[in-house]
Length: 284
Image 1 (cartoon, helix red, strand yellow):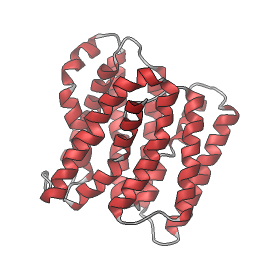
Image 2: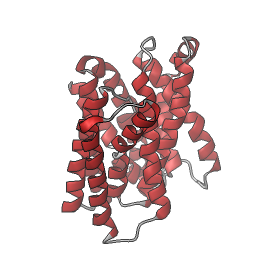
Image 3: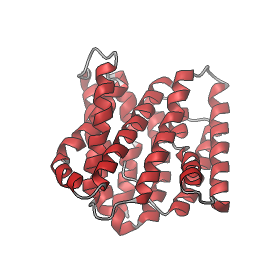
């Protein structure tokens, strides 16, 4: 259980290192490549066998491409929106997960699902009113803000189906490689003129993205999730949300308002409810 909780804290530190990296002249594209590229290289030796074992490896490769799109959208939102809004919009993915469940599985979401959806909408409403009242919001940033959780929800839908004949690290290898299939073209098409960061803060952010938000929490989750169980692993998303909001706010030097704290509480409650509804988890 401690490994799962530690991995959630690692994943939740993404906004902190992303904002620190932007201050050190990293772009969202470079930040995502740093976060996913290093694990993809380390786990690449597992990829050939995973792709040869049934169709699951190929499916997870495509799922990784979708995950890359969602990650890129989240990093773009962090560069264009107030950090509290970007973070809480991303963690609104339970709402999109419930929509996917209804559309693709034709399953009733039940009372827990309806309550989770209501809590997400309440959270979005609170954080929206808390930020839009103080500053104009980027429409492009909002588009990225909603694209991230929508993509993540579709990834969750695939992960819920599972492939028991693949080991967790084999799945991770497919996901990370798939992410790079999307991110490398996006990096080449971006307007970035500088690939390497500047200063100690920039290099520290790059290493943090590579290690503390990437390979280390991935290894902890792969080790701890089978022991802790799927419900516990999915519930760790609540801790991840809280960590992301606190560390992101520290990096932005702006503490959340009471409305934004209330939005976080509503969304964390939704995460806990939907994790018990789906009884499944996702390695990032």
